[in-house]
Each structure stands twice: as structure tokens, then as C-alpha cells.
Image (cartoon, rainbow, N blue to C red; front, side, top):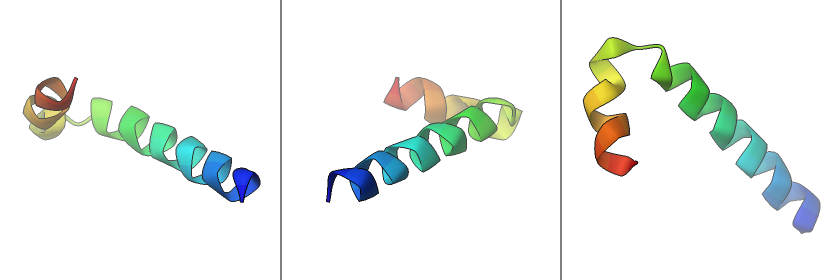
Length: 33
């Protein structure tokens, strides 16, 4: 379902935005970037 896929992508984007503000996750974020 395309709608469900978009919902998961939106949720994933919000999750990554949330992680960006946590210094302890910066190393993980940088490694995946």
C-alpha cells in the first residue's frame, strides 16, 4: 500500500529529526549519512 509506505517514511523522517537533537546519537547518524 503506497499510503502505508508514505506513512512509514514520514514517521522515519520524524524519528531521524528527533535523533539529530540527541548528541549521543550523532555518531550513529553521521555513520549512516
